[in-house]
Image 1 (cartoon, helix red, strand yellow):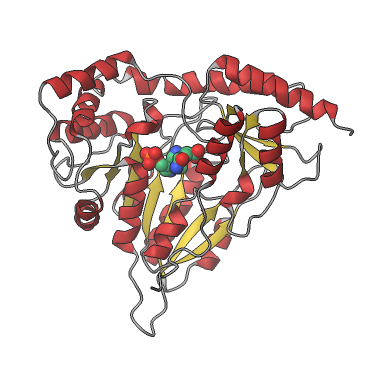
Image 2 (cartoon, rainbow, N blue to C red):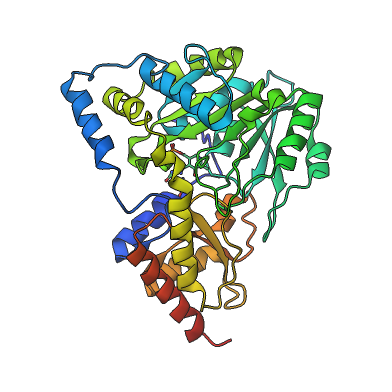
Length: 392
Ligand code: PMP
Ligand code: GLN
């Protein structure tokens, strides 16, 4: 039997590889992005209550109405924009499913002889975007961003738009760089999307995690972008429940209709008791309003712990990731170094080159600081010692 090779360039994701290695060797896992600490017991009790209240059968395909109402209210409170819970909000199996459904809804499989739809992707790019584009029959067009600022050259973006371009995928606050888009970035995107009639998938899963007084500029807030954007969020990041895999997609009615056609066959609906619990929990805005301060302090604990090292960094602007350059210490490739550090000093990280299609190596490692303070301090101490043990 001949099995088609659907994603020839793809292996097992780096998150699985590094988390397994960290577990195998007993390393501190600052690689995969998930909290080492627990979720709010109030939220856990709400799940229990929902289960005991018999909310245990299939949820409606689009999501439990109470949760969609709560997401609509949060969106008004945070961004001052209205989304209709019935026709414009869908609860998904994590952001991953929402990203896949949105991309699949827009990108068309080329008919024989026609060129594929093109999708602009900024790299370093979160690893699920391009496989979704390719499985839908599209062609990724890359804009490569470089450290330390990862600034977007909008003239380059304009130059890469062709009559085949259908979609731009963006991510702010950005994994893996920790960069947060400026309002100028949003306005530039709006100008191009409007002029070339493009759809946008906005991965805003870190919407509630920005630092040093920065504001998250949601694309939903821009009137031109609101009409052509699938905004993707995730409760995993916001409430320390990455394992629940519950996210959402906000998009205008016509886009949501197309989105739900895919969603209903990808997964149909999402865990019912979790949705009831989240709907209730969202009534209190404090947990997500205090999240930036919570993670800013954790970022600072980690930065303080590596301040005396020879690692070079620009403080993360948002997300729960900090990138560091080790170029002054060793010429090794980042992928090799990430594995070596896991074995030798028991600290796991993610090599940023994996997020570039040509594995561009800027000698940068990504560390997740969604960890207990003692883990951050111990990891920082080990990295600092390692950086000085090497000959300069
Ligand atoms: N987008 C980005 C940028 C992410 O970092 C992640 C996961 N951490 C996801 C999407 C996927 O989110 P989820 O776990 O809700 O599927
Ligand atoms: N988004 C998480 C990260 O960047 C991992 C998600 C996953 O393991 N698929 O580390």
